[in-house]
Image (cartoon, rainbow, N blue to C red; front, side, top):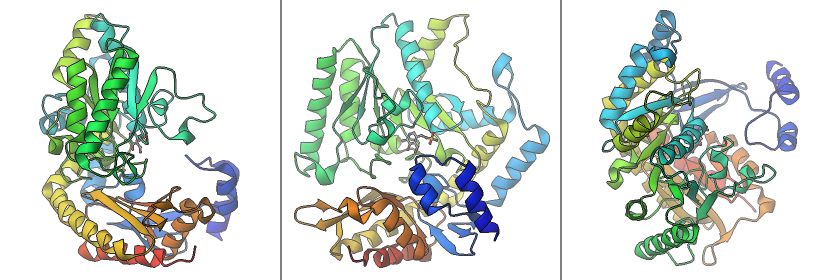
Length: 447
Ligand code: PLP
């Protein structure tokens, strides 16, 4: 009864993010009521393994008591403190320091946001300010990568390269350019890693030259493209792109909103790639989804340029909830959990997940398995040789999601017929094996 009335209220009043209003009305909402570890329970009492950690964010798993205590304690003591007027609070200061210590290279300065989209938006504004401060305001063109996702704020959504975020919104803006994705499984130059790297380097160079080398402000990448279908670049691809940016004096921005905080193994994927971006964004695992928070990491030279450029003037960019003390207290506790064993467990479970998913390659519908750490994808095809995608009539995004749900598994089901996996790092071996076994059951379907 309770569920029925909630479903009706939801239909009438709650607008869901990134959804077809019509489909949603027809299908109705599935109400989740509780969660523990890597498992969630719905209003009908069904227990499911959350193979997607909410929305690739609950990296530490649900129901972590120390996190709950830290948030409660912070709410009781000081629920809010602004960062405006030179005010501050202990938790955001300590979190900024802890993050700076762990971030790659000289990303020593941290600006807190409420999530990933406004972190990306903040970088766009900081980049523009940077070039003004440098006396090169004509550097106002931005480049990102096809299949990339950089949030849905009104500026960042144009760096995102997924049509649903552009069509009908008048995006991208003319100053937002794209180069092709590295998409190894479906790359026109083939699957050879070096050939893909060479092609991307040549394309980025050509794009910069075409726009005008003195007009390009910044280049954005995800270390692994998430919402585009979990596309893992060849090792060395990011470093090669970084080198091109350095050569042309273009700022290099790494968007680690998904890849940060143990998702691919280490705290930050850039560290593993041996590169230091000029700016870096993070969110999701930063607070493991318990409360909203995002962050912009700024390198010494960007920070100094902004500081010099502004002089005694205020840099007019800020949010009421920048550096929220409760989110920061959660961030500190979550970081302690990552370093207290979760990163290590995630690495082990990630290897097990990849081995298990690779075992699905014998299935007639599985064309590709890819991933790194606890971030993976299975791409479905109707013909392995021709790599024929699932027909739209299969409605992969909803039908396959529903089938997984029936089998007690939550995975991301992309419209192209790709399953995305991002389980909490606290998963047990049994849970990882169940994710794989249940996926196989989902795949045993008649098209
Ligand atoms: N950047 C990347 C790489 C993301 O994956 C996302 C969200 O999935 C965002 C930015 C936007 O983050 P948010 O949804 O917290 O605004």
